[in-house]
Length: 178
Image (cartoon, rainbow, N blue to C red; front, top):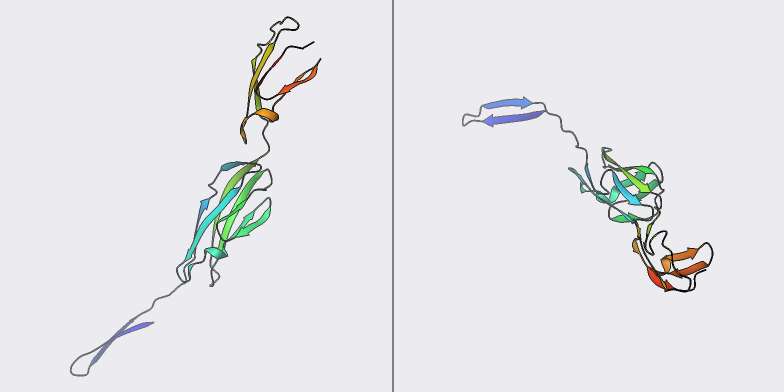
């Protein structure tokens, strides 16, 4: 109850009152990263950033707890990265509890993808082309990986079902094919 009194010059007092309730407010939690429904490759570093403010306590970001339905507790606070989450769909939960037992929670979903196969394309020689034994044959190809980008040099190998290993890299010449 809140009372309000007024005294006049003759010494009379007028009083009134009101009844109010004061409640503690819940903290506010804002997840900046990762964004909801984001997809990540299996070995990507995923940044976790958020803020938590409380009307009574101010910045309480350091008390945030992050969990995954697939991997359990991921960390606390903000500003950390994880690069080894399980390859699956994750429900990520960030939650905070203030000193008065009031809480805030934010959930997001992310997908951690399994390794993807790279694509490979032969530019030269043309498919089903016939060559004279002993003539030089140019080999050229390109390969790309969704995770690593363009693949070059030693990550590329050429093989024949008759002659075995022919070479490595994006391009080379051979004249001794069987």
